[in-house]
Image 1 (cartoon, rainbow, N blue to C red):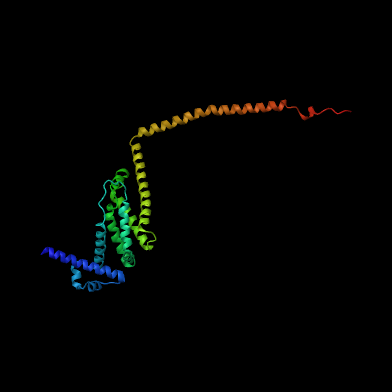
Image 2 (image 1 turned 135 degrees about the vertical axis):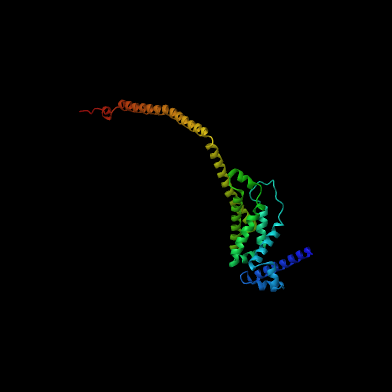
Amino acid sequence: MARKDDRRIQRTRKLLRESMLALILDRGYDDISIQDVTDHANLGRATFYLHYREKDELFRDVLLSMAEEFLATLPKQDKKNDQIINTKKLEMLFSYVEDRFDFYRIVNMGRSAILTSAIVAELIKENFKVFSTTGMETYESITGIPTDFLLSFNASTLKSTLFWWLENDMPYTAAEMVEMYTKVSFFTNFQILRAGKDMELQKAESNDPGKASKQEAQNQDKAQSDTKENAPKKENKKASKKKDANKSEELVQEEPSPESEAPESDQ
């Protein structure tokens, strides 16, 4: 009996979700009411309240159902991949949204835009590990940045990228969007990784003061060595200049004056 009830509940909720989805595409979210949904589903209003408290709760269930539908199509996680972003799965996400452009464009307008943004952000954050790999833990071990924070950061940029794409009527294909997103994401995460390695090096040096003193002594020795090497060069240069000056004076003295060379005139 319980299983029959469960199936009945699932059928009723599915019917309500499908009715809301159809009405959203026809009128938009803001212009439909609970009565519109129940009339379209051919159900009583009381039946609606057995499953949902309000229209927004049903809308949330619609988005959650669509997310589950998409996640079920993804291949299994590749644990051997050590990249932060799985480009294949990302392209599947952008393609999924691209195929349902009309729906996402409509719910990204008016009051529903606030709800959509909040729900999509939550869904991406909860499921971002699907688009990432084991490399996320590697970043934490090197940078010291918690994985949860890094997941939240990357999930936020992904959500913003998706919404920018929708708001601008998808000026690029799904494949082009993935290429641009991964390039920016790779650069950002690379900077985080490099900063983490620099911090790790500084920490190691601070824990070994003798190493810093040794390096400073080496720098001083090098400076002194350079000074000694340059000193003879400077003296030789001065001597060379003095020699050239003396040589010039000798040449001037040896050169006969124009008056002494002039022939005597006959008188």
